[in-house]
Length: 254
Image 1 (tube, rainbow, N blue to C red):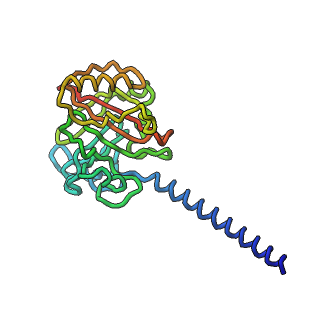
Image 2 (tube, rainbow, N blue to C red):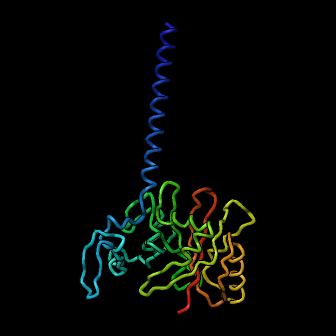
Image 3 (tube, rainbow, N blue to C red):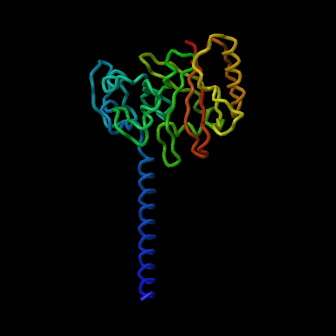
């Protein structure tokens, strides 16, 4: 009798182990699939499938590399849309939103739907008019979602090939990247001062800009002064979860 009970118990244990492995494998697959979703996918949205001609005519196109995002149409879809961020070769080409809380779009797409990867957003304590506009975006080790391409800026050669990005907010401003560095949230000696948006004292702001320059992984030799407006892009480092990659650009003069 005891042997039969042991055999049944052993079979149940094996069955439970098989079920546990199956559940674990399904969870890994689910995580992998979700990690590949973009917060904003131009191939499945109305706005980037519309191209304006020189005469103002709207033309639908399947060539999304040439399609232009319309800020007006994006704002019709969501009034929280603040701007469009564009890097060379559409390395990044994303609408940027801003809400009253920073957690509002962490896991929501352009249309407010739940998403494993939310749309990029401006820090709620910052603005496009701030001396330092702070923007957050997701990245992933599995695929090029949203800010993942910023990982390439760890290499100076990539920065030399792609030293600027544009921000479209009704007008287009070009920003020259002058500092790229890693911030470790677990290091007590590192302060997240790069999220400060405004300064009352110009000299303090100049000291801040100097510190950002010195923290860079490589020398860019971009000249800065207390009148410069900057944008700080923040994303998780795909090689170290406790680290953030910080990419900062200054607005170029007209």
